[in-house]
Length: 115
Image: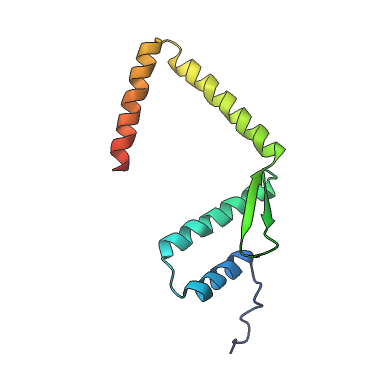
């Protein structure tokens, strides 16, 4: 029995998704649910900014696909140009050998941090 004031089954897409997943799987790891919730929030914001599109599957309404819009692709290209410019400005005084050494050391530090 649904208690009074519980709302409709379609309160929000995230609510429905979580309830449907629990119905299907009975138990879920909270960590995985949290990751999915974060992705929902991020996707909502990107859709709102017209950087991605989200399309619901006609066969299974629980499945959605996302795609980059032209505006989103332009933003990615702009960010890459800015990053390239910053890298050139920051590392322009290093030789190719010195840059390679720096990147090798930074990768080593990053790998160590992931362990």
